[in-house]
Length: 141
Figure 1 (spheres, rainbow, N blue to C red):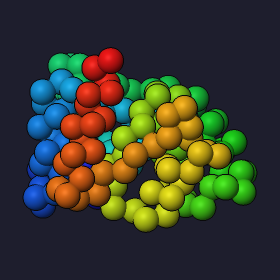
Figure 2: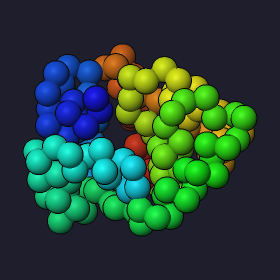
Figure 3: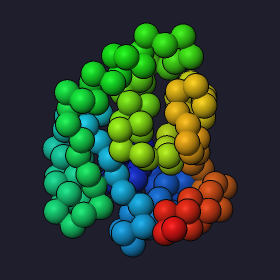
């Protein structure tokens, strides 16, 4: 699970680089809707998110807005995963970098019929470190 690997640094060999970019203030964590519900089930993750919110490296989005957009996306034939809430959050927030190990979600996140202008990018392993650097350069523009 992304949250444990990035936010709690569990099993962090692949995701520690994402955490470094977060702590440098270059990347942000966005959450809301079903994803917020998933995150707050863990007291540790909830505590880290609260801290990240306070220092400006996490941003919460309105749960109902995210859930409403997720319901709309779920109805689209292009949506193959059970993670429409992640696509909804990306659309609402403008986030285009996904840290995940979920193959079906990867397909949806890269699908221009679901997420475009710009299209989504997926970070899965430390082999994708150049993607972080590329993405971070785009963020600074």
